[in-house]
Length: 236
Image (cartoon, rainbow, N blue to C red; front, side, top):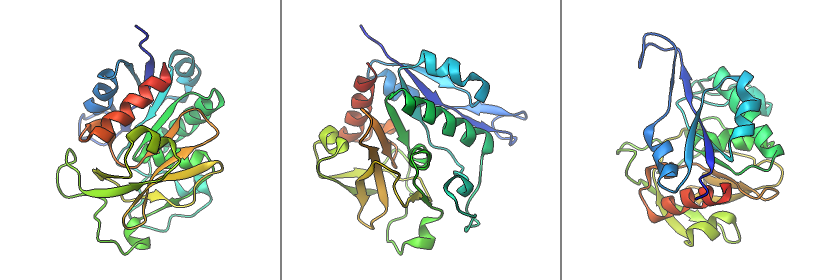
């Protein structure tokens, strides 16, 4: 049985929460959602010195979300919202490992903040705070539990995501205050919320380069399971 090794980026914090000392962390369902599809999860600590070793040992790359934002300086902007918070060590690592994975045309799945940094690496920009730019009835930082859906998104025709989910509108969960603004070169929007916030992107010049603004690793819907399954298959 061919079990691809999929690298999953870990969080890094120095706040005295999980531990009194600096710590790495990874939510369990990021790993189990691909393990259930037949892949071997490989946790990647955000250490730039390990980039070459990581790229040589993994078959696919999953960029996770996190409670931080991509530095606006990476897409040519100043900080315009007090809601922006940065995590330089993790962002620098993810930026570089995405670039290396793209150079190898390695399958990439960016989830939530992972979609956002993927878009930036590909030359796009971000909405720094959704409520500053959209008058929306949708709370993109949903109040109900993250393992429940909270709003709908429309899936664009003639996209990889449409080929995967086989639906034109799906329900998703939501845990973000930023979003894709301008897409990068060769990138198309594949999912849009009913308030016009971008919920998915894909880079058409690569065999599998997909960004998802929601959290399919919770496997709430059939569409979520199909996304994780398609990613693992692409890594084989």
